[in-house]
Amino acid sequence: MDKEIEIPENQILLQSIVSLIDTARNKVALAVNNELTQLYWSIGKRINEDILLNGRAEYGKNIVSKLSDQLTLSYGTGFNKRNLQSFIKFSTVFQDIEILHTLCTKLTWSHIREIIYIENELKREFYTQMCIHERWSVRTLQNRIDSMLFERTVISKKPELTIIDDLELLKNEQQISPDLTFRDPYFLDFLGLHDSYSEKDLESAILANLQNFIAEMGTEFAFLARQKRITIDNEDFYIDLLFYHRGLRSLIAIELKLDKFKAAYKGQMELYLRWLERNEMKEGENKPIGLILCSEKSPEQINYLMLDSNEQIKVAEYITKLPDTKLLEQKFRKAIELAQISHKKQ
Image 1 (tube, helix red, strand yellow):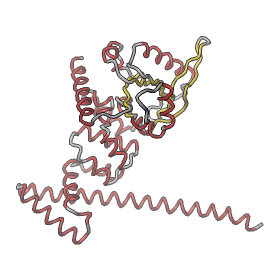
Image 2: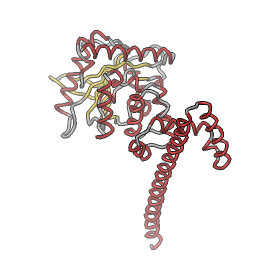
Image 3: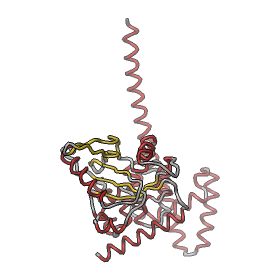
Image 4: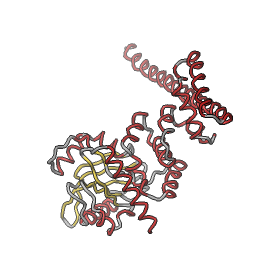
């Protein structure tokens, strides 16, 4: 009898102590990361100032090389030449002390080391804020950079002031915009689809690889339903996939299309969104958003329908087999240039 009472009490005590230990360890890890990251910045700043004062590049290289040898001898490989160069880069890229303190509390040194080598300032700020907001691991951050996530978001095709405003909103208010959320194109190469497949095959493959699909969509997407049935005028309609986005506080209806975008798809999505707004939207939520995923976009039709500036309906391509990286990069650069020219004309 006593033993039956003692076992659950011990379990509760054990769980309580484990929780205390884990909490304390997390606090210590955060404190250590904070101190080390600030130390690395200070070392970089000190070396950088010394190099700048002397004004000679070769002299600076010699300083870094000698310092690296001496520090490695005393403190190990954490202060090798490559790391010292990262410390210098860190202090150059982030010169504002307030920004430094924020970064130290929200990102690890391993995250920061990846971010500082992104040369474009807006792109660097995008990855910084998205990394903080979505709590990416270092590997996820590397994958997002390698998959050219910035170039694939709608935000990259907007004027610089719009990008800055959206990033400031995310940074200061933790509010993410649809332009930061949706991509174009989506990489669905993990589905393993062959040359010929149906919409049902595509949908089934997505559900079978739901974790990878959500990783590609974004961490704040939550799956709700497949083939969501809605009835209008005694006729049944089916939404392919229904998600909820926590940051946007919106239902997300996704329609999968094997062919190019057609104007009729807009009317179909509008019908679904109005139904969701009237029947499924809860108090405090924002209006539902529709994403039409096509094998190919129809730029002129999309332009005439003014879907480029539509906040509720998004159109994007999906790619099931990745082409050469250089070709992708050229495509993204061209798309960004054309979009920015279009904005200037408006």
